[in-house]
Image 1 (cartoon, one colour):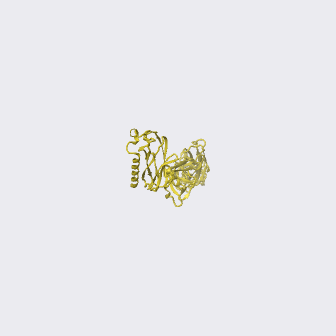
Image 2 (image 1 turned 135 degrees about the horizontal axis):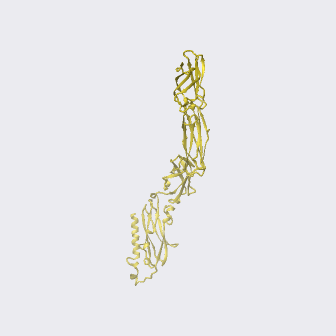
Image 3 (image 1 turned 90 degrees about the horizontal axis):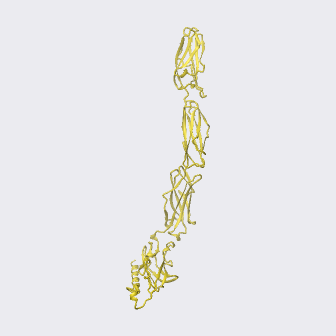
Length: 512
């Protein structure tokens, strides 16, 4: 008896599109070497070595006549229904008995190629497994499923959103299955929605599982993490104040300075910008690269510089006075990021180019004493009251001539003319007298440059005036007791004192 083991043409590996429908058709030639018709066709079998149960044949193994002394043993092995069958060489044992019960068998080797299932997950350009959404917003995820097997496969898509809090929603936008031929790919789209009540910065996860229908052991899990966007904005290293020299305005009267804006939120954001000043007649705008903007988009953790373009007008009378400036940046809806920047703007001419006259109570001596240490006995109605005043020019520009007046109520009781003016950052000493003081409380007023002869800004004139409340005691003097009772008469007479002080004042002015 001869069973051919060197003829492979009797094998047909039928790999079909139907999932699980692949099979190997086996046909073996059996010949009686003696030419006798003595084979028992009911005794044939096919066994796959190394496969549990010898392989699944579903009663397909039969014997068919080739001619009188030769038969075919044939059958179909449904190898996809057996476990652990992979591509490789398999030994197939064919067996038949003769009518006397003798068993004849042979083993034939066959290199089987079976369907192999595989998949690969890939995120395309612009997509990833991590995303952000605003409160009450949504985000769409997309990834690619590649069929890396050697046959057609149907991939099942399942979504697990059991970990999402109440109010959240997730669903698959694409089909729940992907039917892909070998080497092709398909797309899976998933949408996640957050409620308006979601907390900024919170993170939620869902899982999408892709499973091969051909082999359930071939599967991939895709974890999609969604973060509720946080919004924030800050001004980086802003100025404490801005001081503008009018000479630094451009030819059109504009002044420019820069402000840096940082995005402190968790994603790119767009901010509405608004700049104002306390002066309604001043104009102000925000620019980038010379173009006016009303909104600015800033990437996550990035800083953008904007230019503030200011046109101050009618500032001559407010030199040195603060003007409030306000810049706000607010996230556009639905964002809630917000920041404001405020500081004062000063229009001022540098000191070395201005005149600035000033007097203070610390610069005044009354009868040779500071006002703070005067006693009731220092001033009396029997003696003239003398005031020595140091007038300062706090600017670097010399003044022209100006007057100094001493008032009692509306009455000018003395005045002095500073005919040479005061040099830059200089001081001039002036003496004024109240020749006939009245007893009781009085308020003396000193006005420096009351006629405004000096080129001085109005904002600097506030310290050109001084009010001195004093008390003059009443005292009667006689020729017999003047030398004993009047302490103000000790030493040189008032006329001599006045002459000396005037002389000193003239010398001081000439030196300066």
